[in-house]
Image (cartoon, rainbow, N blue to C red):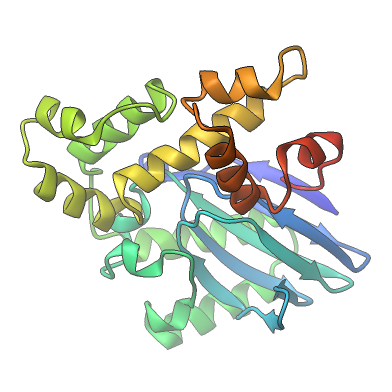
Length: 257
């Protein structure tokens, strides 16, 4: 599997983190962990399916993946190509009217959110494009055409920064007070723009921080304590839901991105 990461044009940088091109010449399966980005996908060749213990479900050609708290398994057919849009936290809300928390743990066909004719035109242009640069330009033009917000919600963006700066260990009541907003109003606003509750977002940040920085020089128990887990059973349960494996097995062998 081959992956290329590209930065967006300046007009989209407040909302889009990066474009990711994923190509598979051979059939392959892989896993993706929860992250803090809502993701839009366009398939320009082949097919991709989500694999669960009970079924294999082929994904639509264009879709939007909401936030999630558990690992996902994917199966790429031979000669498959995907273009992913990784949104900044809160960035997807600038393009879609649907409250993003309604997509939590879900994959929605893009035609349910955007006019079908517009999606078909993008898919045709992607199929005809002769390079990845041309494909990215097609999607950038599409995004600019549906952009409905000129600036991100700065209160939500500040909340995201605070959660990240504290590595997920922050009380939401305290955070709402710092932002001079009631906790209920804060959580509703956060859910709509980010796609999950502040507490769920903090849990994702906390585990990603632990996984991304664990190098084996300290014990897993110490790493869990540093991440704010003081109940070992709770840590193992959350970690297994997040990765599909126990911490010990996960750090012995990983196949995710």
